Each structure stands twice: as C-alpha cells, then as structure tokens.
Image 1 (tube, helix red, strand yellow):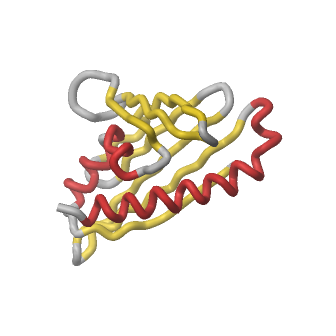
Image 2 (cartoon, rainbow, N blue to C red):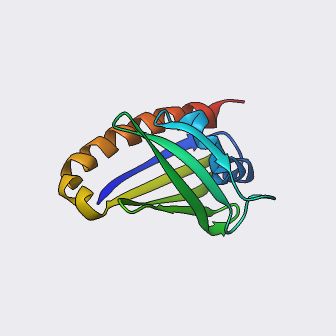
Image 3 (cartoon, rainbow, N blue to C red):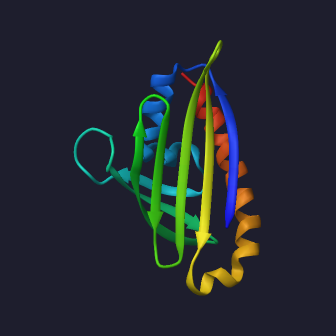
Length: 144
C-alpha cells in the first residue's frame, strides 16, 4: 500500500476549507497529477456525491470515479475510488486554529491484480505525486 499524509495550514475558516475540499472537482486546480475533474452526480455536494477524476499515471490517463463515503461538515470528508487495479481512499480532516484551519490530507493507494507486483515502485512514485499535490494545495488554500 502507498500512503501520503500531510497537513496544510490555511487562513480559511473550517466551513470554507471543508466546502472547497469536499468538492473534489477542485482537485484539478491544485493537484498537478490530475488532468481534469468534474462532479457527475447532480445537486449539492454531500454523502454519495460522485466525481470523475482523470489522473496522469506514468504518462497515461487513469479515469477514477470517486464517491464521498463520509461527509461530516466541517470536520471530515472521505472519498473512495476503485478500479480493477487500484483502490484509492482520501481522508481529509479539518482542525480549527487561531489562524484559520489545518487541513490534513491522508491518501492511500492499494494496488490490485498484476499491479501488486509493482507496489514498491508505485509507493515511491506516490510520495512524489503527493508532495507535488501538497505544494498546489498549500497555494490554493492560502489564496483569496
């Protein structure tokens, strides 16, 4: 299993940070490993909302359908995607601070099938992807 965990401090209040992060269509704005992302279920973002996220995986497009599986505004949102080769789980928590909100992003990627053979290499790559996303996330959550 590959895992990347980071905390970003934001001047945003908890509700604003939660609303931005729970709308997973926003990943394209801060994660350079995402080619595009959009909401595919109608209505407001909430439990069960689904997003199509097209990730760049080793030069190839990897479409993932993420679904919100935990929705606890303004404290926590969890999204999960599953394909025949990977299971991705993103657990995002929000902690109020004197200066705004700390956003903790905990991402796990489990390989399946034949891709399990490459799990150690994928884990190293995932850390690099996570670090580039952290830089973008910090930029977005301190803007505005």
